[in-house]
Length: 540
Image 1: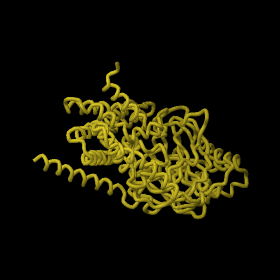
Image 2: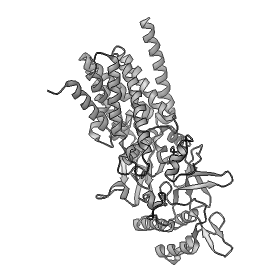
Image 3: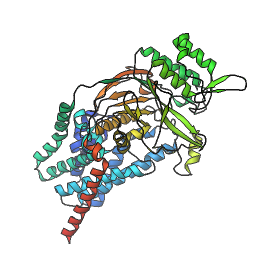
Image 4: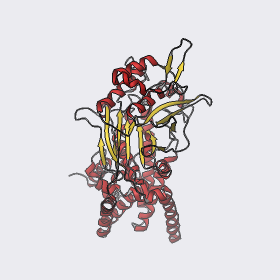
């Protein structure tokens, strides 16, 4: 006969660990209302609270080891990432152990349910402020599978959804212990889907669409820029030619073309390309008449050597692309400020109607990969070929063209507060450019994509994404997938090409945009302090 506690441990583990859209989506509703509750109920009659806390630590460690398993890919990161992975697992599991202490240390009441949910919300929020912040894997992801339940994000954001998940699970646990109050549990379980259905029904209306071409280059680091000193590295000229071929083969007229994070190697302003070679590639792809679309040879784009030979930079290519397709261009590039001696991971905006180039600089940098949080990180980075760090940006930007567009780079998209700032500027279209190649053959691209959907719903704004590798595509303001670049035979890492998408520009104001994280975090602090004082006063 199977031990009941072992059965409860394993069943709750599988429900919570796999109950996310990137794993087994149909388990998500169960994870949202009873996954944690089954675990708490299983060990409710366990004798010592210390044992309960220890068991909860290991249970959550196993849960997170599955959900964050993408961090175990060492192909490009090296073995050090396994230490980071272990540290994160321990860190998050300690937080859940703290939560479990408060679950078991007091009488099972709604008031304690509010207290426990508030503590968890504060703990999740606190993760955003350690080094660059760890925004992955909030409890809220259990509501991210279906567009109906996803609408909860428009009320109090992802932290508010996490509060609701823990509160709903606590109510289920309470009902299981007392064998009553099931009506309350049913109402809490149904509400997100009812609210979401009504929100979509009353707000979904016709709107104009933006036509975009989203380029996915699908180049591993050793082919992209010789990052690993491989002989497989493709020349920058050929990488640009691939992009031109993708766009030409799409045979679609677009208002906007988006290329991924660091779409091509070489710093944006380096005059690395012979003008004659660029002209020849342009003629090969578009014909002689297309040469009129090449930009003027100003210092912004070109340099004349002492041998009377012109060399051009990556900005020249991008501006030519904008002219050729008569479209706005957003492209990720490295860019240097030579006066200040700083390098940026940036998104550049080219408008075919004027000569001004606008720039957004990435604000949230990846530790070791993009900056050194501690000096001891430098030797690790150097083994990966990283000898310098980027400087972070300090503000959001809106590019006004075919829409008011705000760009996020890489995992900035997972930070609610940053994307909300974009909405307040205001932006009515979110664009993410990213590169998920660093953790190949993992769930990272899917998890990243579902985080992006949350940002769209939190602010009631559509989102399009262009990846080197990842999920290239778009969702509407309700988080519903409009279109993604797919292949029946190829994995994410191998899909390349240009996706044509017509993204609806319908957008609306949300409560989350108005109040931000401050509402649910402030409410959680207030509730936890007042309830804690109430409990202590009653004990006295």
